Image 1 (cartoon, rainbow, N blue to C red):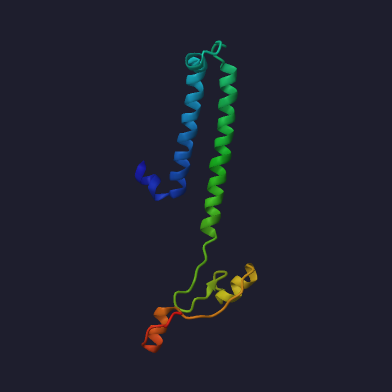
Image 2: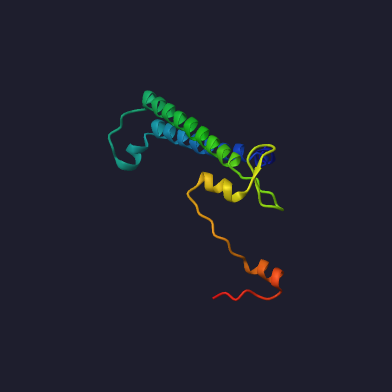
Length: 134
């Protein structure tokens, strides 16, 4: 089962989130059955609260569904938000057959301005001498 979960990172994360919520539910019922507040804090015993335990368990399950679902949706957005860039010309893939220059793409989607420069490695390749960085 571990290998199967590791191949699917979303399932792996969801599995461990659900394990944490399952542990929380176990703690709720252990507290209700053994009356932990009375054992540790000397609070007057209220007896086993099946209704209280059920309400808390329901609340934890609702939170688990919301948390795992939201995490899954956010991770899918991140994956779909990846930008495909041509390794040769540096253009960005907009759609299946549509490519656009990176500067035009970023200028339309973010408040950025571009300035051109040359990195030391490219300068060395072009001129054969190191870039004098002052």
